[in-house]
Image 1 (cartoon, rainbow over the protein chains, first blue to last red):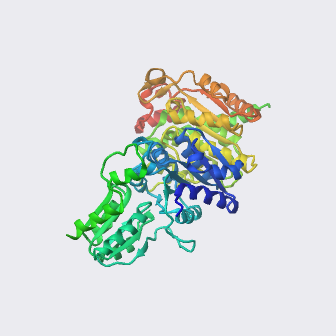
Image 2: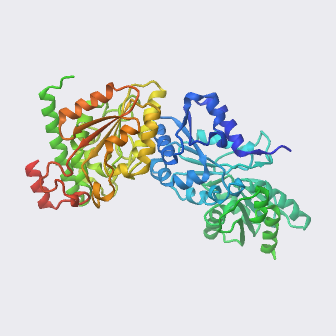
Amino acid sequence: MAKIATREAYGEALAQLGEEIKDIVVLDADLSGSTKTSVFAKKFPERFFNVGIAEQNLMGTAAGFATCGKIPFASTFAVFAAGRAFEQIRNSICYPKLNVKIAATHAGITVGEDGATHQSIEDIAVMRALPNMTVISPADDVETKKAVRAAALHDGPVYLRLGRMGVETIFDEDYEFEIGKGKILREGKDVAIIATGIMVSEALKAAELLEKDGIDAMVVNMHTIKPIDEEVILKAAQCGAIVTAEEHSILGGLGSAVAEVLAEKMPTPMRRVGVKDKFGQSGDPKELLKLYNLTAEDIVSATKELKK
Amino acid sequence: MSISNQIIEELQSKARTIRRHIIEMIAEAGSGHPGGSLSSADIVTALYFHVMNVDPQNPSWPDRDRFVLSKGHAAPVLYAALAEKGFFPKEELATLRKTGSILQGHPDMKVTPGLDMTTGSLGQGLSAANGMALAGKLDNKNYRVYVVMGDGEVEEGQIWEAAMAAAHYKLDNLTAFVDHNGLQIDGPVTQVMSPISIQEKFKAFGWHVIEIDGHDMKQILEAVEEAKTTKGKPSVIVARTVKGKGVPFMENQVGWHGKAPSKEQAEEALKVL
């Protein structure tokens, strides 16, 4: 099966949406070929603004556009969006609750060969700490397209976390996406695997592996990390064991968000599959996923440890 | 353009009123930034009471001129102008910095009628103004965007990212002021981290640069007019000002950057204003 990166789907979705929603403007910081905003730029050059290598100004300019009724999509790599321009996002976008969509590509370690400087593993943590922010991490190309549309129609700041690496398509075109509503992709009773982004397909594979060992796993796609879907977490908790999976640090991301809900509402034994509080490195993305224990097999072993 | 003496005198009188509000508000609040509010009072007065096309009855009118106080700590000067202009009752000024107030310590566009942008974290306002100016060009609107920055503020790198972009996009609907009062919290700008020459820097970044005395109403109005007629590039008006202008014991005193006057000091200030 052909694999499509979520950034590719973003570029296409944006170009399609631009036709329909004339208020959309797109801003980039000299990475339009990589973030795929170039697709929009080609189609709507008058609504595309390259600010050069200047991410702080990228966010501030997007904020200014939003005050005039535009729907700006600001794109760069996740490290430079959530990291370098954090305080611009905080004070110029989230505090005034401006309608800016931050579509951050190259999230996680699957950036690969460029190495740790370009591998954002803490962006979910910092973005979800901001009041008024919505944080979405789609699992495949289909979900990305739906998420881009939902983000454009949502009134307020959105952080859309996208990846560089091609991923398998999980959903068909009938898939329904709603911000803040986690999706149970597979029912199960022994353990619930709650995953986000590219780890959703690994979670589905893990469930199949577990089935062979007689463990019946529920799989939840938590595409929206903020606001987190408490209802689906509490439903998952009825399995009595929860494993979270994310291509992000285990500190502050999906695992933490789920743990926060469980600790207060329904304490449940859990394990977090994610980057274990360390930086990435250069390498083939697939090899890095193995090296950093972000595969279906790692979800399986975390589950077995939990069920021991 | 000839500007009548009557207009100048009316604006000077309005600026005095604004300065009185600044002192009263900050004294009442018990904290705030009088120095930079007073130094930019003539500029802000000229903009709101002569230059800008705004409608207090319709604060979000899409065709209005925009104002971004990038040096957001000078919020009292802007609040005083907005109240005098009729965006909200003047009684609100006494609530500055108090819990539940529509007048936050630094400008919050969500709660203050007539505020075009939330600011306060230095260096961010010019970028937002760029976005507004670009949106205006995109929609073929005639509104203009005005910004006031501090001379300490231009030490922020983001200002120069934005300065580069404004010239690149030929934002001639954007006019920026630098309130060049020469002082920042830790001392004279030339000693802390010299931004001198601000004029040469903006020139090098592709801007049209105008130098004025920022307390001379006629010069302010003429500079704004020159900026309006300058096509193909943004304009910056580097305004020489005096920190604490109008209150003798505050003038050129770095200590009055972020300190409220006592009741007695406020009374003394109001006597001369």
